Image (tube, rainbow, N blue to C red):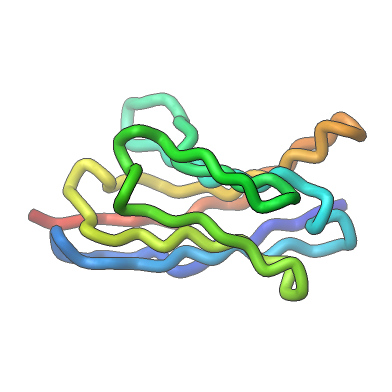
Length: 117
């Protein structure tokens, strides 16, 4: 069973930065497609950024140029560097591990990010 533990959320002023981390248990991390999603109150959970096992990245249009996703396979950890934060970035951020080749999908517990204006 894979466990994902997010950290790094918090309260920050608009224009500030935060770095989220997601540490994964087990041995499948280096094979996994990893994603960061966010969910604001009353809204659906949306993809923010993702990174494949080979390091290719995808970003939501709303965060392009401000957020950077990266991974460290030696540490079983994926990161989300968030710069130039805006109040509309306020949400619970979730880490996702996609092991589609074995039809498995895992989620972390989420970490709150609040950006004040």
